[in-house]
Length: 206
Image (cartoon, rainbow, N blue to C red; front, side):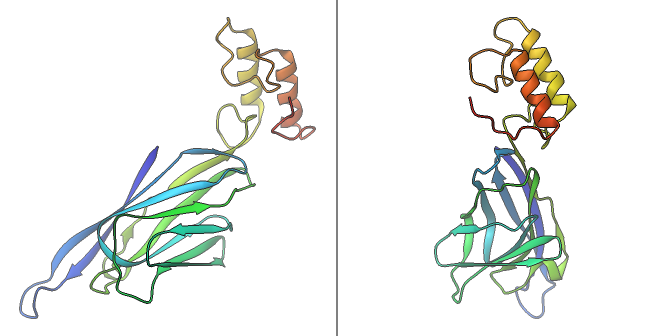
């Protein structure tokens, strides 16, 4: 499980005569670092303080389902990404482990990026407008069983790993058994070569 943290600074005014106090709202995004091509991606948002709305971006257009009580999710495509808003026509607060996002299976290989860009805190102050957000998003590598080194692509490095596993002692065949016959052999190596040359498409049929 991979976790990243987004810190936002919001100003809370105790009274008109006092100096503004600063409160840190911490949003922790949890999710797997690697998912197989076509699998659903699940990301959990955990807030250290109450909020009424959240804005986030994902790098690719895909169907998103929100699991959170009392809130609505709406998304729209922007230049180079997809922007989504979590909000509600109510004063229900989002706090703690409050929202789970489920992204439908992503077909395109490579990194899938998720980042929070704004949080509306309970006093209606958007943290992005006060002091900005220090954003570090969640990056999930979308891959296939032929991507042995989990780089997001099948290439020479994967072929060399398959060669090493085919030459290894018993027990050394850990990920290159592409035809699922229980051993790593030159057959698996050649299949990887063909995938890297776009002659075959991964995943392969046993």
